[in-house]
Image (tube, rainbow, N blue to C red; front, side):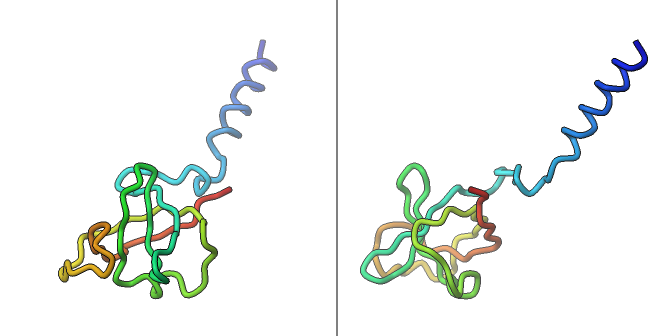
Amino acid sequence: MKFASLFIFLIVLFMSSCKKDELFPTNGYEDVTITSMFNINIFVNRENKYFEPDNFRDFLPTFKMGDRYWLKYRYAKEQTTLLQVGPRITIVQLKLQDK
């Protein structure tokens, strides 16, 4: 009985100590993919809502089209958009999703 209790305890301990980055919290974050329209890089979420970031190159000097990210943003002060497909945003935090 002690062996079974110890075994269960170790399994629970192992499972709770998994790498937390893989389970990145989505609260306050958008699940987005990088896409391009007329050579302007934008984000699109799962509901096909587009976001035009005003500081894209500050966070992504190099990137691969189609990569998925967790995006935290705020609405930009200047709302004039180039493509008129979605709101102009300022990226607050950006994290590449694990594949």
